[in-house]
Length: 240
View 1 (cartoon, rainbow, N blue to C red):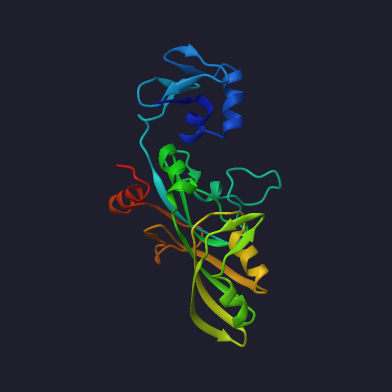
View 2 (view 1 turned 90 degrees about the vertical axis):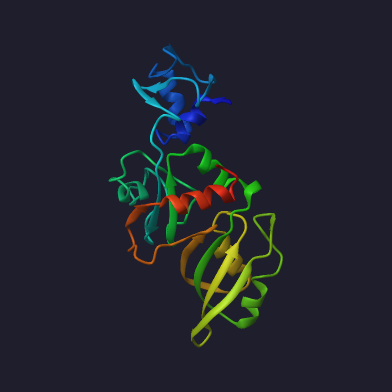
């Protein structure tokens, strides 16, 4: 299936779509030996796509990794404010991988990164409803906690009701919750809690679909997904 070249290049983990357009403008991208231009299309399965002479696409080994993103790190590959990025944490990966969705700067936990463009697109597309579960420590009243699972609007978008379970009480008006959401709106859980009068003290993503954060991973560490983990994840988004 043909797609825009900048989408293919981005999905292969080479660079962002905007940077891919600049590469094409500079003449650094070829398709089947012919210099490509912005707006050109190609088929990742059948065409010989090269960036600076290096072939990319379906012929490049695919890697999908699990990172324990620490709080304070931004989910970008570069940052104009010189903040620490997830790219700095996965420098040992043999290919350039891109984050699957985002965790805000002050949240931590499971973050997937991959150079499999199709998997990345499926995991982030609302059509496939990949649930995400977070361990969230909040301060506030029990009435606010009960409201978390009610229908609400975030930034003008009506979200599907979250599944909320109280795991333990950690002090007066402080609770550890497990919250499962069905979308991935920007800072969704923090905004939900704010609407319910709850203050978030700690937010850690512990699962994406069937995949759970490896308890052996320390913050800032990563590992490749096992074949079984990858197969289960692909099955959930209808990939073979």
